[in-house]
Image 1 (cartoon, rainbow, N blue to C red):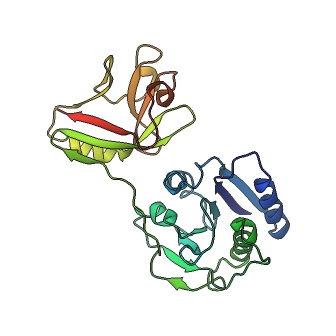
Image 2 (image 1 turned 90 degrees about the vertical axis):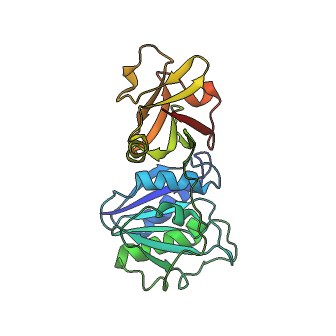
Length: 264
């Protein structure tokens, strides 16, 4: 069975999802289409990269991932296919793939799509016009040579914001907020443990009445509903939350909000 995933910023109101699925089911035999999400923030490559890195990289060999976020072909932004971990990622070279694969240690292959042409004269829906056709070819051949030419690097390089230390303060950014309002920080547990070596601990002042000074293993380790906590998300990133409450909404935390961690 050919697995194809969809990660987009379409939302669920319009016809785009059904239109693309109909095209794929009609052109590829024995296909299983998996919706990763269609709720990526509009045109937000950072949000898309975080989701793809954590949701797609462990799919089976030969899985095809269609990523449609800020996708339109131009002289600056070309359509490409990236082969990584024996999987195929169809997307636009707009900074998004450089974010997805910036921390991947394995070798990746990048191909342009110069041999693929749109059937129409209008170019408003990249997935319908190009990506579905590319997915069909990959499914049939598992080869990229018929799609285009291998290239050395991404044309557009984008880098995620890195945490940094100034004196005894660690500055982090919120890079993702899930549907529960939990905030994911741009630092992993492994890196945080390295920073804490030789120190007594840390503290995070959420507001005047909330100070976090330890990492808990479960949301239930705090005493009361609404208590603030720091834990490790399934992605490996530090995660701030309120027990049975919405951390982001109640405390006014947004994507790119700065979180200061005092190092002791």
